[in-house]
Image (cartoon, rainbow, N blue to C red; front, side, top):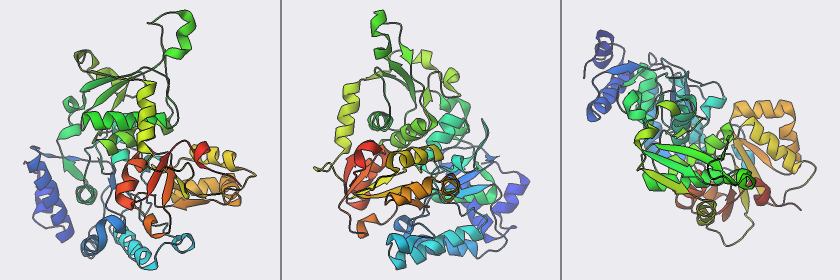
Amino acid sequence: MYLNKDEERMYEGEYGNTVRKSMEILVALGEIYGAENLIDITSAQISGVSYKTIGDAGLEYLEDLASDKNALAKVPSTLNPAGTDLDNWEKLGFPSEFALKQNKIVDAYGSLGISQTCTCTPYLVGNVPRFRDHVAWSESSAVAYVNSVIGAKTNREGGPGALAAAICGKTAMYGYHIEENRKATIVIEVEDKISGIDYGALGYIVGKEIGDGIPYFILKDKTQNKKKDSSTDISSISPTNNDLKSLGAALASSGAVALYHIENITPEYKIAGKKHLQNDKMFISSHDIQNACEKLTTSDSNEADLVCLGCPHASLEEIEEIANLVKGRHIKNDLWVCTSINIKAAADRMGFTKIIENAGAALVCDTCMVVSPIEELGYESIGVNSAKAANYVPSMCGLKVIYDNAENLIKFK
């Protein structure tokens, strides 16, 4: 790999051990993937935050890096969800030993100049790259969103690689940073109207089928035009940003999709190379979607002990919808609405938090059902409206799952 003079100084340790170690990681990754050089990045998003996933070894590694007081992130950088609500862990019943070590992990990142905002939706809290910016992001759903919906460029980085990129302000030039590698590999025609959890189910189906491919979606709604008796006059569907968030999260969790295109929706669909994929097509019907929803449910009951919404972290609009759903009522099962501390602050001011808490639920910050130790809190089943969570919770937490829309999951007294 070619390094410029400043990069060589980083690699040789002139800026300290943490920068040297970070540059060694970037160079090693670049050589593995055949990169010829490094490129500047404008932001980073770093996984490897929950104590549940990185343990004592990860904590020790981070504290060692943070001991170099000259090492600070060179670009705006945010963290993935932690394993607890950093401020209210005791109230929510998280184990104290776990919570104290979790806070040490986040403090170590803070010492490296990384924002201690812990969220899987950094694009909702200020970490918003511009179109075609090069970034180094690692959380799978955030990678899918920033590549697909925003049109910035990142590979699906590992936690150490994204941290190294943040510290050096660089990443290796390969993969999705190269324009040619961002073209679609398969066309997915969705034949019927979809909404709500259908987007997660769609992502689950496609991710399992194509692995790390790049899907090009054509979303249709035949039901809008049945009266016109025309097979060609089919209305397009316009998903919301929350729908796109759910779709990308599911694609990335059941497969390894880091980039997708949607006709007439995402910014790069016109250069995605659809015309070269006439023989590479997959058709998804409402029957397929329903089957996927049923497959994602592993519980025999229709009532969950705990309902967890916000995977990826809930937006302000999603929190408003939940507040409207529970207003003036009292919830029978436990309910967590997972979000970032930033979005919760806005929900506090709008009065949504008070409405949700008055109904017997909680807005939970910094964490989510996947990376928190919910299996230690006495729950046996969990209700989710996230295909990503439904896919991960059984193996990572050992709980049974009910996959459904929020209005069906939440039970009232």
